[in-house]
Image 1 (spheres, rainbow, N blue to C red):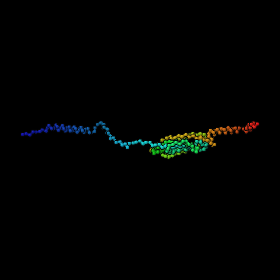
Image 2: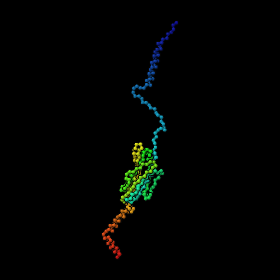
Image 3: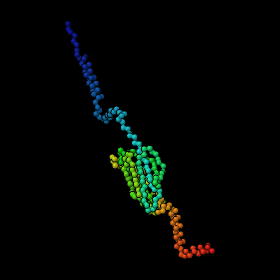
Image 4: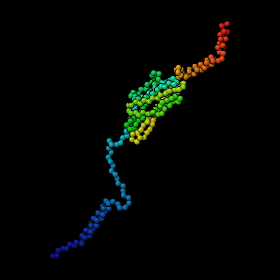
Amino acid sequence: MNKPRFSSRPFFPVVVATVVLLITTLACAGSTNAPPTGGDAPPATAPVPAVNPTAMDVTAQPAMPEKRYLKLEFPPQIRAGDSDIVRLTLEVDDKGNIVPTAEVDGNIVTGEVIEIPNLYETHHVIAEARFDIAGLEVRPTELISAPITQGQTAVFYWSIRPNEVGIYRGTIWLYLRFVDKSNAEESQKTVSAQIVEIEAVNILGLPTNLARSTGVVGSIVGTIIGFPFFEDILKFILRKRSK
């Protein structure tokens, strides 16, 4: 009895088809994962960093301004030819009270509270003052300055001398100059402008108007006394009255 023969030919197409399908699948998978060879590449997406609330930059708040008391002392009246002192003081004032105008030893004292930006850590702070007044000799005439630090008092002095009788009005200016410690940049701020009125009197201490009136009267009397025959005329009038 003959054994049945099994032919392997029917299985060959199946094997070939399976191999072709496997190669096609692998090729498709490779083309999907590989980067493109042409055109612009898609932009890479950067990872988003985690936000730390404690590491955020917070703008620093400005420092509280420093309150200071500005006091001006000057003589309201001075004799012509004499000299006197005008003083301006910039001192620390913790309470912020404004003292009313007072008179000390014949001088007028005025005061006001001013605020200075607290920039001492980052800037050099310099107080500058100038006394502008016409017709009066003032020393020094130029701008004078004094560096100040927190809590430090600055004092300015001027010597004044009137040569003629009259009323003199002027202005005392106070500025603040800030110099940056890092780059030396400068800025200036006007703090105060105070009006000063000083009257110069004659040697007898008479005010201007009274001195002028007295001078006019004296001139008239001197003219009459120096008139020729004034004594004879006066005697004639007296004889007439006695009769």
